[in-house]
Image 1 (cartoon, rainbow over the protein chains, first blue to last red):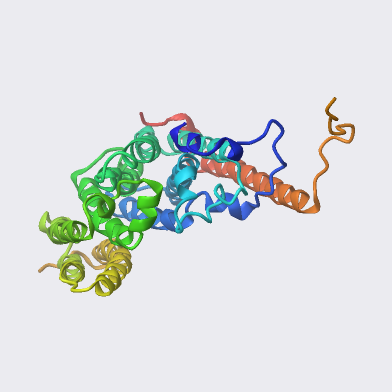
Image 2 (image 1 turned 180 degrees about the vertical axis):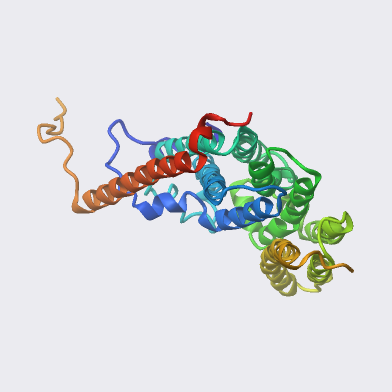
Length: 317
Length: 55
């Protein structure tokens, strides 16, 4: 228990712990609802654009399992990282550092929800989707949180895969397979994650340094982080276009991906060329905010494209 | 000798702790109820094929 083991002995529960004062909202906060909303949205897109039919109730069940599984991995993350969360401004008000939820409660909560979400997915949808969901939870909780996060500045690059699996799970829920199309959706989120997260970590470098987390700005400095953000943003442009280039979408998606990717690259260039610390901080904030919009628009474009193709046939370029 | 705390009354909850426990209990009840309803509806949706789960 490296994470909670990092807490001082005085912070550990006494022989007879105080009765809990945790409210329902504390338990909801453990699920990281903001992260969950993007996960559910990308999973929905994977589910909708997948070929084949799924009964709406089964589709809803799949999304519910993905949402609960994502939340469960968030709770496990907060359990393990409670010691470093307490040291960082952004995370100090999470339920465990505040003392509202005991670490053991968060662990039991995360583990229980993980088990229920995976088993329900397997029993009511299919076991491939359930296996992918289990792997995603394990990847986020064990590979990213417990291993990579405190080990390497590439933590978010590799760990970002956990956030990239949901559309693939949605796809597998419908098709009971993993198609090339779903791998493209995975790649989009995988390459989007580093510039998104590094933009955030640029303005939180002191926090990460205090907590001893080797985020890229702490280990390699702000200039190298800005350069890497630029590289990944440049890669994002063609990767965002891949679904169209491979012939899976119409020109409508292609145009949206081109404009969105070009804007992302522009924000990254502005960040890389910032001539003062203030300008760089502002550019990083803009890039972070835009990156969320970019991914949302990209996946919304897939949905719209699919809807138009379904209603009116594919729009040829 | 050290004095031991009086355990004869068990754990006495403060009003805040009681409120929190009640809201947690209601949330757990609702979640379990929703879980049962979900399985019931899926059973209706899948019909006789409910036991046919692709591996």
